[in-house]
Length: 138
Picture 1 (tube, one colour):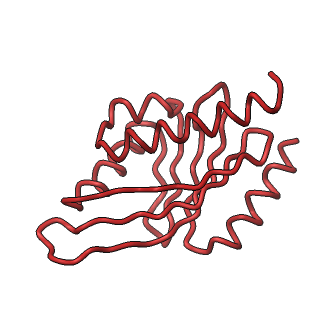
Picture 2: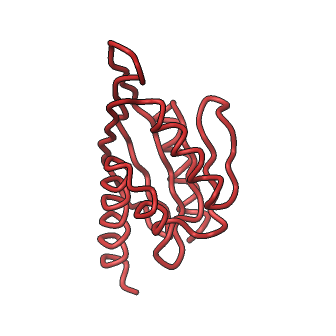
Picture 3: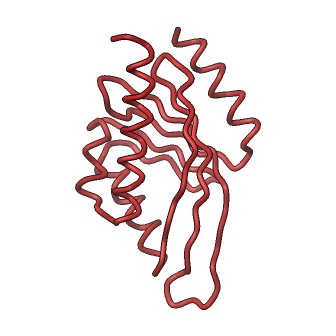
């Protein structure tokens, strides 16, 4: 497949996945993950292997908010690597305030689906690691 069309396809698929997440449509969201997908969460929150474990992690995370939303800026780095800076936020369940944070999400794609997501709180460090990964996969 032509690199430009791959770029557009991966970025668009990420956008669709993010929209499903914001709607809490976990069935729709999981269409974008390979069965053997891995989610490596930031800040020692764990590593979740297999799409069922990834789904449980995301359901638990989103379920802890009454009002949740994620916005993301995605950049395709080539060779199946997408780098995203996401702004995540919401009102914690039964809470009065709002939380907001930025995270880097590096996703690796194959055959149109996500095979791995690595989350990090250090945006610059994560970007450098994602760029190295894209080069290594080239």
